[in-house]
Image (cartoon, rainbow, N blue to C red; front, top):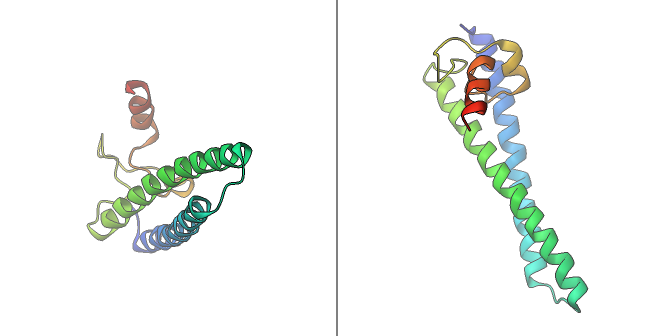
Length: 117
């Protein structure tokens, strides 16, 4: 079980990550709108803009997923469920939480989840 000090530490890390992701999302969406609204002079410009937009869209999608995981972890902190594996209900190792603050599974259950996908 995590101490209150550890919970505070992870909550701060999650809130910082959330803030960075929201900033990135805002900037990327603004950049994508700028590309959409710019005049493309030739097929090369259009192709480059299309590739850039596709890459930005993939990045946005990943960041939205990560933001959702962070929100879930923050809710778990609030409800006393943070750091508990969703599969086996055992504590998730502190080392794992340091690496992936929004981990939902312990290492063993994560490997099972990966194999089942």
